[in-house]
Image 1 (cartoon, rainbow, N blue to C red):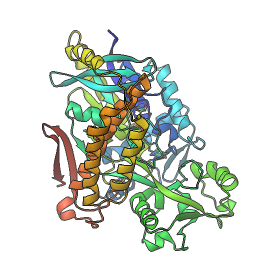
Image 2 (image 1 turned 90 degrees about the vertical axis):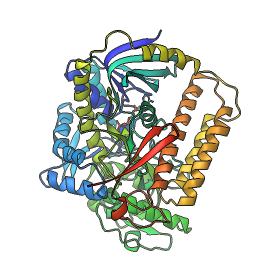
Image 3 (image 1 turned 180 degrees about the vertical axis):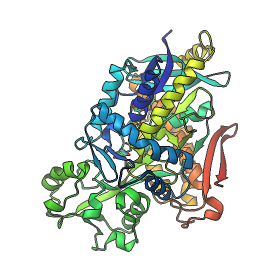
Image 4 (image 1 turned 90 degrees about the horizontal axis):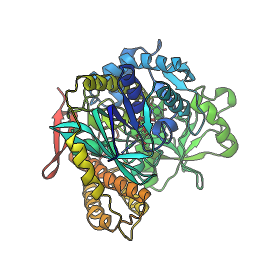
Length: 530
Ligand SMILES: Cc1cc2nc3c(=O)[nH]c(=O)nc-3n(C[C@H](O)[C@H](O)[C@H](O)COP(=O)(O)OP(=O)(O)OC[C@H]3O[C@@H](n4cnc5c(N)ncnc54)[C@H](O)[C@@H]3O)c2cc1C
């Protein structure tokens, strides 16, 4: 049987997974990191802007903490935010020691990558460190189930989609670092693999998830006809003018005052653009009056100048922008060391929830991967050292046999891509930037229809299509989570905007929505904050 044994199993090869792997290795554990693609590559980390929001001399931890809570509309987990503000700078200095090139600015640290993958030096630098430190890596492998032994996670079942082979992992501690699910939406800036698998793995293992209704859209996505969707450096929105096709100034019209606009007001700014579009007006970033000497100094804006001026001719005409799905704020509930509520299972990075509340401040996701990836790695190593379980895990051995049987090929009439497009449209139109009760109910019906009527007709003829089936099954679960939570929260807050409940209502809704698997499907529980 194809079973690998390790102390700590890390699922996911982005920044959170690699930080966790390095921290567990420092404690002397054997670490195996499994990822859908080669270490660091095709991750959100790789494609990111490489910007870390980190306390600095001019941005002390207290201010960073306050701004993170304000941006999150007060429903972040304050303990996690406190840790983020206290520890982010130390972690970033470790990146510098690893030789990852970067530059300190007033609000944090910018990794010195180039467009369209400013995060590449970060992802590749961490991957290099993992190799040097003896972290074993298996790429092209997708984890599809977690094994549970006596209520504890004892490893995972997986599919090698290049070789077409099932496999299993026995581990004393397992860390989920699978990132988010942005690629489930019709318009997004994520790598295609980001289908929210980790939320579903945790859900089926019995974990609670929190705040799944909060999905972030990034306002300045390039929307020029015939051009690839690309993120425009957020700072440019403060230096140029954002106007609609009538020439109206968008920040003024919608009273968007927090600056930097696309860093601290991603929610309201995305909503404003979306509303303009709904009313038949396009939105543009006008950089024509921005001279070279006034161009923002941050790395993202500086390195994008050539593309914007030469290829998009931004000095001659305004360029069209439109929001893209960018980040999931919600995720698996964790404690300060990344422990989930199921023993043996840890989570870090975008798959985990709590740090960002209802809206994420730009730059805080990468800081989160470093701070909580590191913490989860240390805690998982401790757990692995204390683990008393002896001999092979029956859950994994038995589970692998059953898993093999579930990997059947099938003749069908619908491709994985068609299913993904259909789900993406439902989420974009009914559970995206602008939501309402009837639309969300319809979205739920349509998701059930896809699952019950179309999924059995899926074409699954090769190992890649087996992966496709796994991803779409996960996507349907994640879609259901978002829709159910969005329907439950009858107010608007941060990235969750309900047309039928357009105001925030602290008296009823200042708190968190937890979701857990139950015999009837999903159980939702709202917990007000003290
Ligand atoms: C275009 C873009 C720009 C951004 N810019 C910034 C920025 O400047 N600053 C900032 O703070 N944040 C930014 N973000 C957000 C930030 O990049 C992400 O939140 C962060 O990188 C997530 O890191 P992660 O390690 O949790 O996940 P990822 O880096 O996405 O890695 C997830 C890993 O999990 C693997 N995986 C997933 N499912 C499975 C499975 N079932 N089995 C095995 N492996 C699996 C994937 O293959 C991948 O290796 C940006 C995001 C995007 C998309």
